Length: 511
Ligand SMILES: [Fe+2]
Image 1: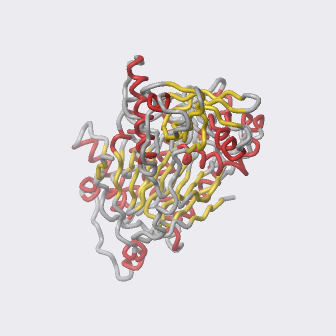
Image 2 (image 1 turned 120 degrees about the vertical axis):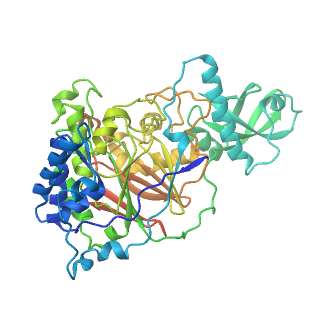
Image 3 (image 1 turned 180 degrees about the horizontal axis):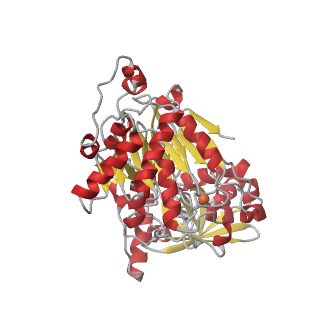
């Protein structure tokens, strides 16, 4: 990992904290946006302390129009130029008590490989390199716990009765009367291995392995046949997680707002904003970062006839509405944004961060945003977070007979565990989720995160797998007609608040 430290701004005072101040901040940001200007955070703070903030903003805009023709940003100097900043009267310090008592800001590090916009030519060589990388990275995971691994060419040359572990990609499973035949592939050879049906435990594992997965197989040579004795998924090792970490703050995880959809529950989102702005709530005071795991807007033309289900039919206006909502998150909480399949960017994984004019619209919310790719690896304080919109879950749901959209409320945890056990965010290649054939497969889960934060399927879940906190943050969009036809019952209006010290989690539902 080549982490890049993102220098985020210093401590920011909360402007008040009550509903009135929040409404005022929103009004100021909206008024500036309406007139084509962006307010910096400090400018917004200064306006908050003006006698008549709207009048002060109006004066500042007129000044900028006159003196800084072409500029679209109103900064602190512009505000200071048009108003006298009164010194705080006695007692005002108490208003900012929450911020003053807050723990130091967490350090946030982002793995910059996931910030790039990759281009491919679509050549055979690129696909070969991609699968080679998937193989090599997964093999390294096995090498940490298996010694004496041999390649498939050596397996084929073994003597009768000899046994060895090999790591290979499973490219085909064929069901026979007395055995399952698994076709394996590695850079040296291909081989078919027999999994006898009288070994129930082994058959269970063979059945659970998804196609295109990299697995380790203990193979025994019997005459000309290769018999499987053990099949292993890369999986998460046990006993590696430290339960306690330094720092004592919370992260708030949400996903799938779908702003612009007729089904977006802005009433519930307003309740969320009210809650997160209540500085008296200790849970909020200890929250230092909000992460949104994709599908922030519903987008335009994402699926056929989508316009019938849109409240806001322009991308720009959807993003402007989102910017207005984001502007209401209190400034002591950093906002990190991961794209999903509804955002106006490349669909194939890994997705780059939102860019260009769409990003500029969001930046008009008047605060600093952390634009991440999908997936994103970020270190917050001493915890490593893997944030992923979750497109690969579609293929898992399609491929695993026991899991369907109609039973996701009970089985979503299982679907997410399958990703962790296969150590891959999109284990099946070439199904409904497009993947860019990059020279490095960035979807291999090659490190152990403390938290896996996913969305996409609109069903909330909080669980744990081998010490990893596994969360699906649900949605803010009411059931759509498509979801109804699939029998999917979404969990609407959910935020997961995770304490980074002990990874305890609360799913807070707004209704
Ligand atoms: Fe979604």
